[in-house]
Length: 457
Image (tube, rainbow, N blue to C red; front, top):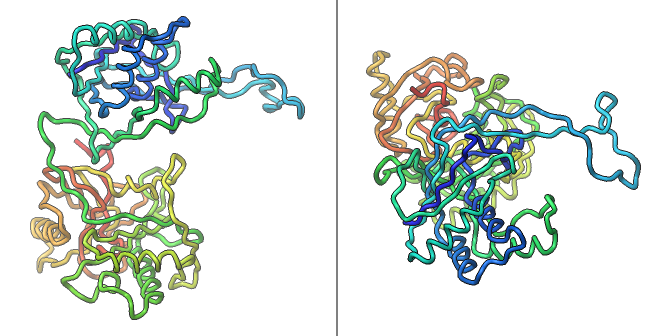
């Protein structure tokens, strides 16, 4: 194993998060660290040797490294107003308001390390002594990482590090980091030749986002999703989550009207033993001003659908630009393209991530309600509903009359006499969403999200 140790003598790291520039990036992304190594190789008009370039190429072509890093305070930094340094535009002087003329808002985010000020990157390959010496010399030339305010001391070793918190690349992780792709070194050479030392550089082409998961000292067993996820934005819909099942049925009815006699069993749901498509209204919940308003529609296609059934369903969805609701409203349907500015309610990771702890956004209408509505019997019925939906039996279940998410409808607001309840469940292993359970699970009542942090013990 090859390890890169990077120490922060000042106990802080200055670099902006790419999604939210007012917040600091933590941990440092492997691609940023790779760029810093390349910059060190060329520092002071120095030209790296052929062997050094080959070692840098080996790092960019290797599998994403695992990371060990301490916790850090990543609170957003204050907004500063600084003088404008660029030249006036030929269209006239720039104006930044009467109170702050010739000032522009800037953020200088800093992550303050709360543990030992060192991170360790580990690659699964070994080097001989001479190659290790060359890489160690490159690391010794690194002066800073991120901005010049965060000084670093770096070294390469082949010894086992003592991890502070170890993360490794994993498809079910919840930490997304940028890693270099083959071709990144050549791209950096071309960018430097074109832009020189200019801070305004084009977006990198030879980078990719890779998800990382925390390692717990052994292989992690996970429960993978049985669904493929699609999402649509609903424009012009004022419905709330308390009537999600009615909206979900309207969506299915619209698709059935387009497919007519060709509608597969997964759409109409009349065959009990067949797979079912889930039509899941997505309510906006989880923040202080949330009111549970439906912002989109999630379509969960079972993985076992045949090619023909899947093609028919996707074709019908493509032909459905509008959705007519039971109250006469007409909502516009627009496919969701995930990005940094996508509403959190519409982000796929919000509903399809991995987590061992899940909380209901809308109450679960029990498949087989008990004759006596006692807590233990209700818990048993809810566990049965989860198992019927294809999920493992949870380790613990906490019942509630309200959702853990602000804006989620309470039990009393659901227009049905069928027994239903909110729940917080904890599984023995990470479970991938969407998590749905209960009698109305295919229409958005009984929809779960990963439990908010404030409810995790």
